[in-house]
Every structure is written in C-alpha cells, then in structure tokens.
Amino acid sequence: MRDISGTPSSGTRSASGLSRLSLVIALSASALLSVVGPAHAAPAKDPLPADIPDYQAALNAVKSIAVRDTVCRFLRTPVPTGDAGGRVQALPDTAEPCRGLPAFTIKDPVALNEITAGFVAGTDQPLPTKAVKLTQLVSSLSTAVNGRNATVMLAPTQGGGWHLAGVRDGDNDAAYAATATVGTLVFTEPQIRGWYQLELLTVKPLNDQARQGLDGRASVSLSEYQKLVKARYADKLPGSPYDTQGYSSGNSTARPQDAAPSSTLLLAGGSGATLALLGGAAVLHRRRRAGAS
Image (cartoon, rainbow, N blue to C red; front, side):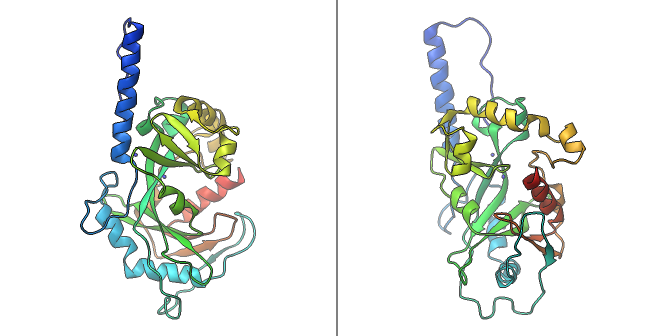
C-alpha cells in the first residue's frame, strides 16, 4: 500500500503568471517523483532506497531463515479452491520445510503504494504525495517452485522495522510494483486490484482492472482520477454507514494489527487472494470483506 504539499497563494494573477505557476508545480512534482519513484532492490554498494524507511530491516526480513521457511510451508500446501469467503486452514508446522524443494531466493522488496483515504474523500489535494501512500513492501521469488510463484508481503512494525504480514500466491503485485522508474510512481487501487502509473500529474492504467477503472481511457489527470475514486468509495470510508454496518472494511490503509505478528499461520482460498498470514487474521478478514463488497 508515500508528500507534495502547498497551496497556490490567493490573489489576482496574469495569464503568464498562471502559466509559470503551473510549470513550477509540474517541475516540483517531477522532482519529487524522481526521489520517491522506484523502490529498487539495493545492491550492497548502492545506497538504500530513500523512500522506504528502515529498508535494511526489510532486507534482513526477506533474507531470514524464518521467512524462507514460511514461504516453503506455503509452497508445500495445496492452494484451497473456492471463492475468497471459502475455507481457511492452518498450515502444518513441519521440520525443515524447504528440504526437497527446488532452490530459490526471495528478491529484494519493493514499495507497494495505495491510494489514500484523504485523496478518496476529496479532503486532500490531487497531488502525488497526497494521493498515494506506502502501505507494504512486496517481494517475489527468483524462480517458480514446482510451477508456483509467491509474493512475500511485509508490514511496518510499530516502533520501526518490518515483519512478515503474509504470503500471496502469484507474483503480480511485486511485478507491477517493480515497474516504477525514475520520474514515475506506481500504485494500486486495491478494491478493484487495479494498477496505475503516475507520471507528473497524469494517471495511466497498467492492467485491465485499471483500464476499466478509468472507463477505458488511456490516461486521465490526477484530479480526474480523484473524482472517479471519490464516486466509487467516498461513501464507504471508515466511519461511514457502509463501514459501520458491516458491509465493508472501508478504504483504510492502516493495519494496526500488523504491529504484533503472532505464530499463527493461515491459508485461505480465493482467486487472486490466496494468503498465508502471520498475525494477519484481521488483514485476511479485511480483504475477504472487501472482496465480497
């Protein structure tokens, strides 16, 4: 699941003054995106990504034996069939879970950015760092294992650092997140699993869900995209009747439950939503409810 701020001063301006102001805003957005754009895998010689706090902790997590063993347990367990509201099962705790599996590594994590509640509500300006926010880090595997790939999801730990939040079947999230380049920002609209690229103040779709989310258009301005998501979700934000009456978990990127991972490991079925979760029953519940709404 990452801020440009600033409001033009009031007063009368000439047309040329407005043009200069527009240029300054665009250049400022470009400069910011150059800083916060891609969350690249960082070789030992390169500086760690400045846009990801405690990135070394994230690297340590994905390279740890505990996370690798969890991924192996996930890959050894058949994926439950059925929809997102189907059966949930505990993963067996086996000794040496990676033994006998083909060799693989877990790639360095990249940023997963999501649209923010303030942007959806229309209370925040349509500016890049107000529109999206870093919510998780995701890593995929270096190679498929027995025909399966997986995405490792890290959540921020309260007080600093990162911990394992879950393992998702497939690698789409990590693949899209990794396409960010200098000068662009990639983010997701998780409610429809749409992925977008933000370049300056222009939003472009990266998958079919995003194209549908833009009504088939090849691109829209960030302000126009804000109007679209506000129409879709503004009445479903946390605290709204839609949320409080239990129809949805709302459009919240906060995951306070992730601050204290437990030893419980769960696996749930569902197309595109298969999860193995550490201390993430609440996250599982959130995504299942969101998928059902």
